[in-house]
Image 1 (cartoon, rainbow, N blue to C red):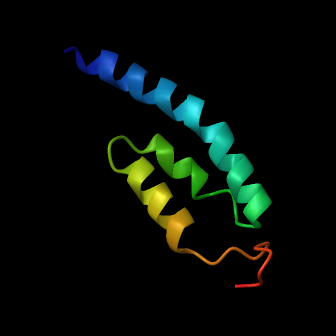
Image 2 (tube, rainbow, N blue to C red; image 1 turned 90 degrees about the horizontal axis):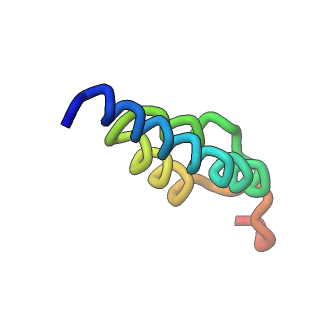
Length: 64
């Protein structure tokens, strides 16, 4: 596969995923920057998922 094709596919994936992640971060009371990790190819989405899964959410209803 052509490298430019892979870059375009990665950017399309990131643009599709960024909006829901920004909404999750906003509703959870977290900063916006973990959602922007999806723009880093290959390792960005797992990093964003790790940060969202293991950080404390200030707006959590049980006050964790």
